[in-house]
Length: 191
Picture 1 (spheres, rainbow, N blue to C red):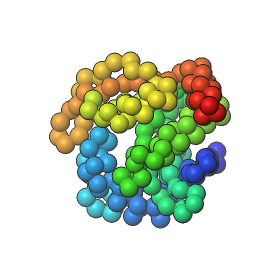
Picture 2 (cartoon, rainbow, N blue to C red):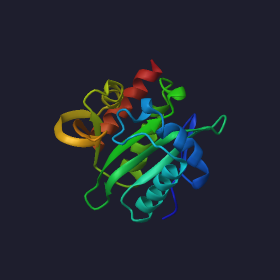
Picture 3 (cartoon, rainbow, N blue to C red):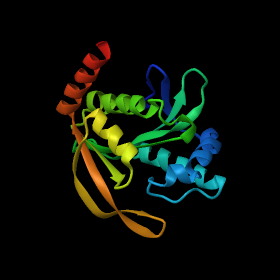
Picture 4 (cartoon, rainbow, N blue to C red):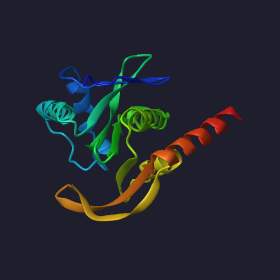
């Protein structure tokens, strides 16, 4: 299967390649980004290359897809978004994302999530999308609920970072609920 390129009004979601290693290192070595990411900040450039290698392996084995998020106007690489724990058979996956802090609070994450959810539900035929956040990650919780995700509960000790296990909040969005929430958002934007 060729790598799926997705486009939105302001973004292009592309395959991550080794040429993106400096940008990934810059983003994932930033403690503000990794604070709620589930991994410690990167320490060296080779770490970014290893992550890119894992993205390629995960896609080749059909266990997930990770896109690079690039602005269409300037071509700037601003983060990644992806489907983790992808099971085409079970029609489910988990979504995860991170952005360079210089691009926070501009609506880029919501725009990228909408594109990935549309692809997951319409093209891949998934039925359930999950998301797990750190308990303290209020920005992600707010974004997920705004898009239509519902909180299901707490996963005790689910996330490991900084030598410690942390609880995670689990959210889900089902295909029929996504279709309803997408229509509601379109209606709100017309008003």
